[in-house]
Amino acid sequence: MTGARERVLSGMRPSGKVHLGNYLGALDNWVKLQDAYECYYFVANWHALTDDTDTTTVPGDTVEMVADWLGAGLDPHRSTLFIQSQVPEHAELHLLFSMVTPVGWLERVPTYRERIEQQGIASPSYGLLGYPLLQAADILMYKPRWVPVGADQVPHVELTREVARRFNNAFTPVFPEPDAKLTEIPKVPGTDGRKMSKSYGNAIYLSDPPDVIIRKVKPMVTDPARKRRSDPGNPDVCPVFDLHKIFTPAAEREACATGCRTAGIGCLDCKDVLLRHLVPRLDGIRERRQKFAERPDVIVDVLQEGARRARAVAQATMEEVRGAVNLTP
Image (cartoon, rainbow, N blue to C red; front, top):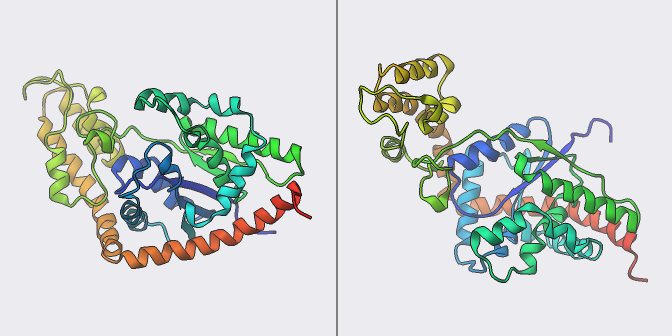
């Protein structure tokens, strides 16, 4: 269709409130893509089962996460926001893909072995092995032009392209091959200097009020070699300076770097400059997300309407797929 916008598809597992690393690594980019693309963003709740079958917190975590999405600027009038399991066609397409995809393709996906080793999984489920294949179904269902990912996720998009080719060759061409839209993910350290992660307990959340953000940033680790106020420091190895690169304007950031190297300023002074820019950036998001968090019924309505729209697309795709596979008279 002439003039139609290219389509983008991405998703997140429902792990609860969004932290600064999630926001800067994906969500902020999702918001920007709305201006130029037709966007589909989904809660990957079936994917949450691949390594943990305790679903006690999943419904509440979904509401909290989508409150953050809406607070950050995702607009349900400009993007389709939905829950994966409310579009059951994803499961059917996953099943059909599993019939044509060699097991070896799945075993060589880097994250499969990594997750087994990192989480000490003695007997991995098919769900864990098939995770990238369900992901391929999630993507190809909407025939997107682009899948925004970090460099570490490119193998998943390449597998999706291989699955599309395999299906198209086995039956008839149905699926165009999507491309990865590389997202530059900034280095977002947690308060202990390690990568920001909920499991490390070192995260700053979009929902954190200013006093909590201040309380988390003030004791943040800095250059370990700078033990006294009079010691010169090295901003290149300082986690606080990594955040300055994201939030602080260049002139002030360089002044902080110079002050650090010459011991002209202390670490607390440096953190005060960061907080002056970090806190206001998150204030608007927190205030908007709070309005949604107080009305979970509104969030559920947004997701149900999104599922209705997504399912219309999915049903059209599956009509083509069933025609190509040709199983019934």
